[in-house]
Amino acid sequence: MGAPRLSADTRDVILAAYVAGTPIAEIAADFGVSQSYPVLLAKRRGFVPRRKIKSFTPRPSKLSAPQQAELLRRYQAGELVKTIAADLGIGADWVSKRANAAGLRRHPNHKRPA
Image 1 (cartoon, rainbow, N blue to C red):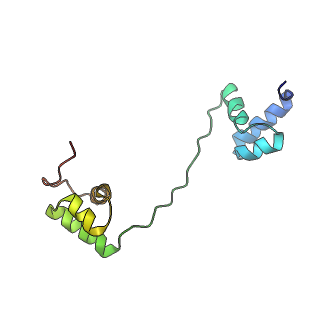
Image 2 (tube, rainbow, N blue to C red; image 1 turned 90 degrees about the vertical axis):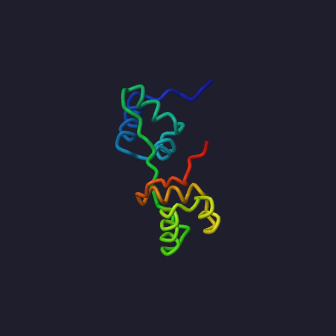
Image 3 (cartoon, one colour; image 1 turned 45 degrees about the horizontal axis):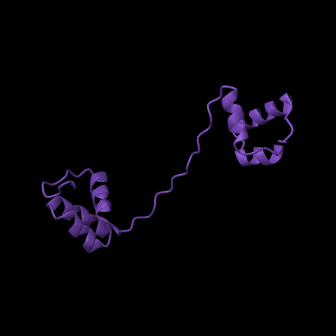
């Protein structure tokens, strides 16, 4: 058979901890339930489940400031993206993303892949 049923009071405490923002793993360990149970309980009671918030730490640039300036200068001049990428040792998609982030318009020589 399965685990014993939790009392209504225990379920209320689990839900209160979940709504208060207590980490799910902590709730599960404290009450001996699965990590999915607090979320399931919240859904059953009409609460919107919390979303995982990933902390964002930007990766350091693969290029130095002079290399980034060179990338943008060459892109703006219309040099092929794959040539710029090969010379700088990075992917062509990275060249396009950096140029786009800098607000540069696509040059006529920069054709989109078919």
